[in-house]
Length: 70
Image (cartoon, rainbow, N blue to C red; front, side):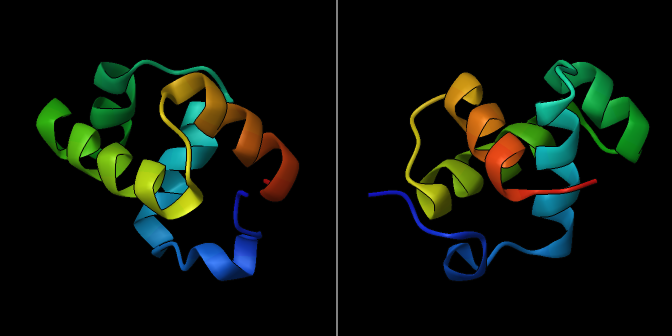
């Protein structure tokens, strides 16, 4: 079962990354928008996937669409 938004315990930066994921941006574009390297985004996504119990970016985008209002 996937956790609720409150149970996921996401950091503010992880939420920011998820908002961009929900909008369909690539890791490279997200990295450019946040002024970090692509590896940093990949690191954040790995942590996000564990916290929200998903296995890929598509599932993360669906979870974000259901739980994050931007």
